[in-house]
Image 1 (cartoon, one colour):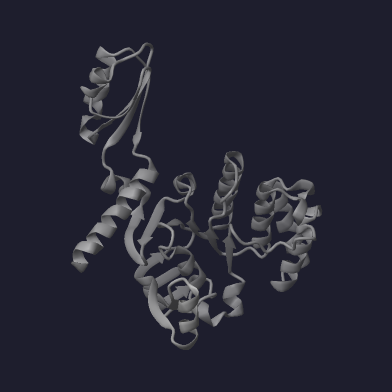
Image 2: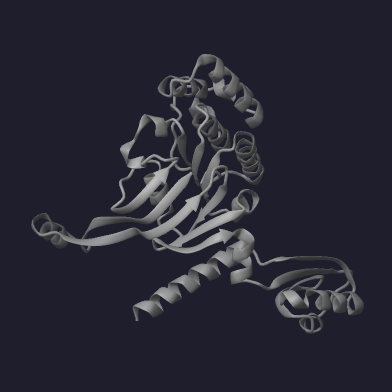
Length: 331
């Protein structure tokens, strides 16, 4: 469905130091530098896949999504979406895709979302019968109810985001580019959005690329992740294999029926966190059974949990390694 080869996007950026004198000089003699937002990445995405597109701020995630949707032209490389070249902006492609950005909105501020739905129906030339059926399904799945008849300015952020997503799906796109769709939402609203996105993918076989700084979004939706940093590919594979590669150790959380000293807990493994009635230890994968057996046999454990390291720590470690490798290569 999506094919990317040696994709590059470089920007020529004007630079000047602060101050009036520098501003006056810049009028007659400007200094420029090149910024490599995307610097030669390759990946393929099959129809129906849900892929997390991850990286730190400024990594090139949004730039890549804008290239895939045809909003930006690449500096070099090849890009195809369902056999189309996005930069050509062919009508056949535009009817198959949708880019949803959590920090931008398409809803008309003083009009109810229902008006935007109708506008998108006209833009994408959706037959009325199909439009009413699809909007009815979206209203039910997202629990929109009377929200679509209220002016957009009267809706909360979470309500607006649900209506934004519904408006984006009026024409039934085959490919969804979601850029921070849950940004600013509370925990319960994030769960609603994730459940809806998963159901839409499963029911319609839509291909999904998601960028998010909320690792819970990624863990809940994306079996596969693509990680870029400074415009370069750092990882492409399953989420589980990413965790195993970066942080193969396990975290064991122990809760005690009475206070336990840190010295007693440290005999089980590396202590990550210690409180009077709770401790978190880090142990190698092949040492989990032994550590749990010793804990149950020697400590007043009333509850325990074994899990991977938090995704936030995994991503931070991966970014640190990638930067260290680039610095070493440059040296």
